Image (cartoon, rainbow, N blue to C red):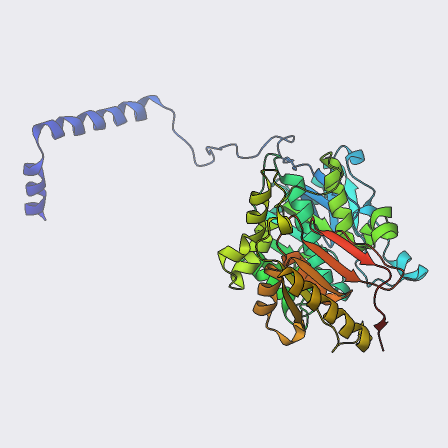
Length: 455
């Protein structure tokens, strides 16, 4: 040990030795001049905030856009299953009956209509002071936990979700119309696609349809999307529910959320009286707010349509059919067939399902279409969609110029048609027909249509 000590001394330079002596002398002087610290004394660092700062700031809710059944919020809160709007300006938001409902199954009876009317248990508008009181901790920041990104909160019951038309051509079609129309050219713009979709009133199998079109569409339209269903929503509800002994609650805060509710849409004239289509309410809401008269700008649906068709293997040349047609006609020159180089007529036959034409009328329609297409040099397809794969169905719709068929699920493929100057849907109805809003295409309702058999 002595040898080690002498080795260390010899290793210290004269400069280092001087610095050590100066340091030791400084400590000695400070110890002599400063009073001693007794055991009962302590050094206290003030870590508690003032009474004002201990109540943290709660981001206010904002209404980014609203139409009956469709509302986009910034900072929407949820605790114990109730949606909370935190604001000092309640007048900035519609009546809650035009935003949400109880989410129960919908039947056209007075009892069902009354059961679906929302109460403060479903949605409540509160002031920031109440929010801080509800969710603050004891001398801790508020127990509010952010759900970042963009959320589609689709409040419909499973009754309408497991149907290709209602799910894709009504709910998702309307959601994207309202989303795009609200944020297009309005900073700050959110991500171009939703981060998650939540079905609080549906089990995992209730948003999927039998043929499998719903999951195919949803997963291919937004590949990185996460899906939450009733069990996940129940988890969020349960985790914010006060238990015995707890005094302060907690809440989830949705950063940006589109809330869609079918029952709420039907409480306004556009959907409830005129069209019976929730997407019509979404479309009209954003169009009127933008000062337009008919439709959103051409191409608003293309990001979704192209994602789905690319996933189905449709080649780029086929995706650009509509763009090429408009490019040919933009010079003002009158071109045959609206600039579409290869006109395709697709008649969706439903002769093997419940709702179909009388056999002789079906045969007469096919004969008339055949003669017309032969005369004009157009392609005709008489397709039974249930006999084709999903990829084959979508590829056919992607190049169809004129779509013909009996009102029903098969015509949902109209949302995959190319947008061109002459794209048209011929929908065969009973004499008392209802109208729908389509994706910028002309749609003809044939009141004097061939006879139908629903037996």
